[in-house]
Image (tube, rainbow over all chains, first blue to last red; front, side, top):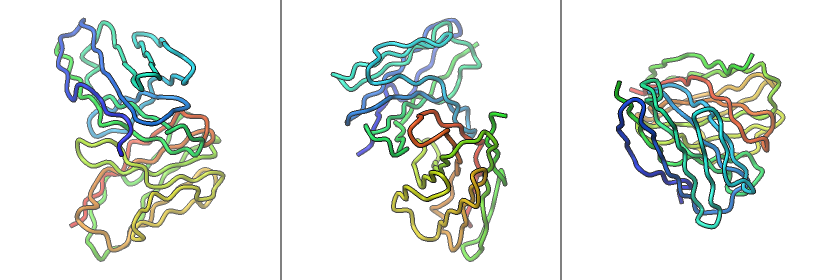
Length: 112
Length: 113
């Protein structure tokens, strides 16, 4: 079954607004990661949160993790047009094998 | 140098052709990955190499053949592909299998006619 289901599938906002994306997963994890992908390009790692952490910040990004609900959220504050991209959560299934499974992704569009 | 380089960027091949995708990293990473991504879908893991040995094969058809000649290079040999194999093929690397963060290349867009 697919680890990491994201919500919403698409999000359209104005520049300066905040964007929140949610990710749910099914199995245990060691860590959960978020990646960004500009159209047709490679993925860029944004942030990694470990299973014993509840919140993590990096610049305008804030990630929360609730292992009891098997869910995570990514908040982008003061969004910019350059933030327009697809955002994926990725989980390791609680193993150390290097098997990272990506969620379905949220397509974020930020209008200038 | 925090870059993963993939060549070619675009590849068009017929179903009877043999071609290869190449991936190179000089970050000293010891784990390398191939992912396949169809349009509007998430990347799907194909293979994982750890210390130049194949450690995960996600039941990928034998028409895809990976090779890791050394710790910096990863190839994906393609033979007798089907049109449904058309996709973006992404290479990634990480320090080791367990360190988490993946560094991705820009991908090779493959079209099978």
